[in-house]
Image 1 (cartoon, helix red, strand yellow):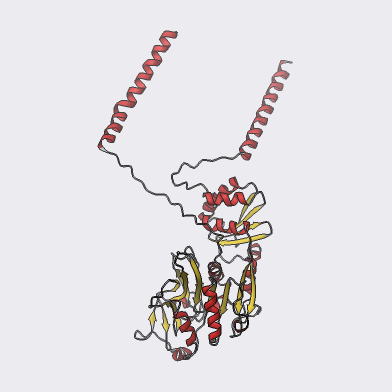
Image 2 (cartoon, rainbow, N blue to C red; image 1 turned 45 degrees about the horizontal axis):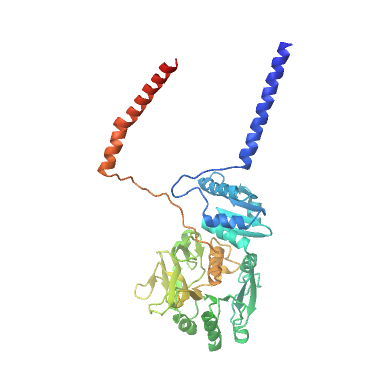
Length: 453
């Protein structure tokens, strides 16, 4: 009988302990808390990110992160995801190696490793090499969806957004529509620039525009709209009106073709410049580090003439091994070689942004000129960073205000400097203070035990 009671008691205690542990796990998993004691709050979300997550409510927020299996960068971004998980009640994330799940990577249009896809309700955003700032901005666009209107000019043999062959821009059109842009084709001589168009795109005109069209472009710029001009190299003696038009915005258009020997080393053509240098201080290219390619491009550089109230910035540069070939006849024959007296040596700018600054410091019209239009055609838009760079340019031109600035957190070295008085105090505490404290504590303990024994 006694043996049965002991067994029953042991079983009862075991059940109680098991229930206690289960309750503790439920409490811990539901009320997960952590504290960040670093001075820079390295392991805490910025207030802006928290506010956006709270604004998104309890709707499901899902992230698919495409990172190599054993890459150390996976651990860093996972720490960030866990911070979000503690803030948003319905946040889920999963990691996938794009080489092991090629079908899933293709379905999500993954062209580069370190890419995350964010799904929220019926909308989706995709980010390459995410930071907290880029992630928060993507969340903001998901929480506040808008339809922005883009107009594409026609009538000058520009690349068509409807064509599906290699020279069309159907793939880039799909990307823009995926990012909530409404696209329209217009004829400048007939339509001007409609009020609904936030951005006008001129993609590779093959002949000069007439004064009425330039006047429509100038009016749109003065109204604060964005203009995206992509202009390929032209035959000698043609396209002079483009030079004159861009000059008023502080932009110089080169009569040349960029030759880049480095492209041969990566399996490309020497007329397809490899670009991996970007202006780090401009919003478009501040954190952009992906290589892009511009087939048969011309130089576009800030003008040496100062244009009042215009802020002109070169965005993308070729490598030091490139040059701007001015003898187009020799280039067509395949006899091009660098001539120091007539050709410019790299690095060379081939994309420039110009922005009007008003008297009160606000932004006016915006213009981007790129010396190539092929980089967003169906043949090349999927190549490396071309799509992402073009999309960043469109975002900037559209003045999409759904953006937050979150400074990057870095650990700072802060040595401790003490005055001579502070040094003597620390020395006295270490040599006399702490030993005296423990000695007095021991004597007090002995005294109390003697009194109570």
